[in-house]
Image (tube, rainbow, N blue to C red; front, side, top):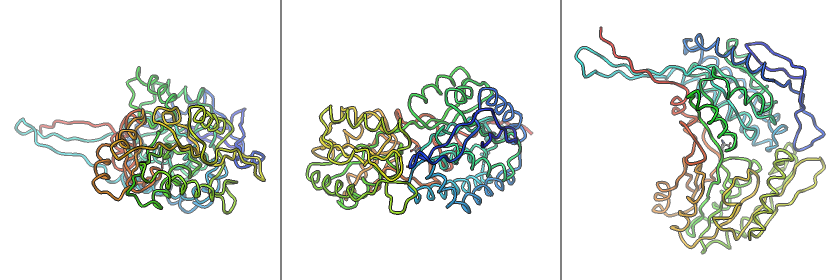
Length: 476
Ligand code: UN1
């Protein structure tokens, strides 16, 4: 049984839970010790005790630790990518690429530790100067989802530590293996006891104990809207700062004047790679009528060439859905879409394979309208719907007709439309002639409307959340 990490000690508990490979449910990766409320509170106490010392630590030490973490992840990217794919189900090349991305994020924030700057201003009062500085926030609760089990923890944990905060990390229940590997690496890299703590366990127990605890100064969360709401409600009485990413229903607009092959490639990648299990997935394909039929038939042909199967097998393009519950949800949404008048143009079938896993052929639903359930709620699977529109103006209106606002994409050769879309899309990120999913490790990430709340993650903007400002007036 793999242990928890609390206050610098590896801690075993009486109860372990198996970690199962979604490509082959007979393959048990390991068993993981489950934290309860007591372990959670001990970890929070350890993080709170360690916070003052770490908050005043030498930035060179923080740099060196984060650098070592990045170096080890990079050196072991193949092995960690393999573990990730075995545990989460994205294909091996995607798993390895994600490990590399996690390493780059640690490297980026290693550098940021040495770049934290302030400002010096003259006061309006003679002889007085004003200093603006940033200080750590304290204890950060990191609550992460299963779909990017290395990259998302990296982009929350690395900046938290970089700016001098201590961390209580609760990974998603489905991906304890990657979380544990990351904890081992952090532990080895010289993070002092209590500065980083790993709690594996149920959201209803560990997650709840974290959000209810007044010693947690900030929570960075990625997950569902429903859980995000619970985090926000529990945080309000403490006036605690929160940073939340809660999904999307991202439009990819395809205009008549686009490069058709490129648009098909963007849709294929954006909607179905990583089994469509990305909050940045291109789940709504909004296509103008001049190119609509050609786009659909080209996309369906490309989908037919995708090989769905075991994430670790050569030649697989699309791995399994993460578990039985998610598969059921994907199928339910496909069914609702059909009932409401959509046409299942391709896929949407549960597939048999050599191994027992949760295999679903990517689904394309045509003839949908903006008000249908399939275009309003996040599926989080390899399911995309097509909305046919007259022209660019209608495409933009439909693209914005959603409660979410994470990413919006457009495929066009018109600079005029691309520029207008970039400004008018109600989303935190815009992609021009690119898939909506797949972001760089060194720039801000985040959305608007129901997708996100609080300051941006990643890049240098991450410091807005992970530091608190101080304005000092000094008279010599
Ligand atoms: C990406 O598209 O590269 O949960 C990243 C998610 C996002 C990350 C997407 N927070 O899918």
